[in-house]
Figure 1 (cartoon, rainbow, N blue to C red):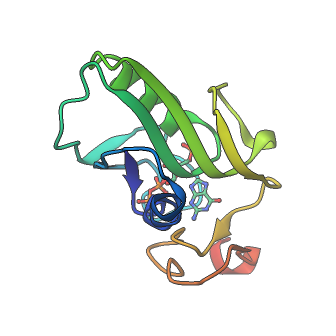
Figure 2 (figure 1 turned 45 degrees about the vertical axis):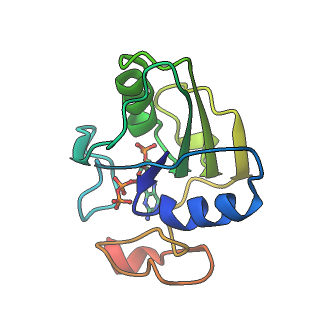
Length: 141
Ligand SMILES: O=P(O)(O)OC[C@H]1O[C@H](OP(=O)(O)OP(=O)(O)O)[C@H](O)[C@@H]1O
Ligand SMILES: Nc1nc2[nH]cnc2c(=O)[nH]1
C-alpha cells in the first residue's frame, strides 16, 4: 500500500524488486500542506479501494519525519482488522521524531533537514528531481 504522492517513486522501485505475490493499493494523506512543518492534522485525500481485513499490510512511505503521519496511519489501518501492519520508508529522520513508530524497513537515515526531490515536494515543486536534496533555507524562511 502506498501513501501518495511522494511514495509513488518508492512504490515503483519496490514493485520492480518485489517477487512475492502482492497487491497494491493507494492512499493519499497530507499533513504538511504547502509548508515545511507538519500541521499535526492528518487529512485523508484518498482512501484505500480495498478491504484490508485479514490482510498482511506493508505501508510504503517516502519519509518518516516527526512520525505523526505514520503513527496516525498505523492506528487508522490497524483499526480495520488487518492480519499485520508493517512499514517501510525510503528516508527517516531520527532526530525529528516526535512519536516513536516501529518502522521495519528503512532505506536511509538522514539529518533533520527539509528534503526535496524523488517525489518529495516543497509547495508542490521539485517532486520531479531524480535525486534527494536539501532546500536552501532562504527558499522557505
Ligand atoms: O513524519 P511526518 O512529520 O508526519 O512527515 C511524513 C509525511 O510527510 C509527507 O507527506 P506530506 O504531508 O508532505 O504530503 P505530500 O507528500 O502529499 O506533500 C510524507 O509523504 C509523509 O507522509
Ligand atoms: N518534501 C518534504 N516533505 C516532508 N514531509 C515530512 N518531512 C519532509 C521533508 O523533509 N521534505
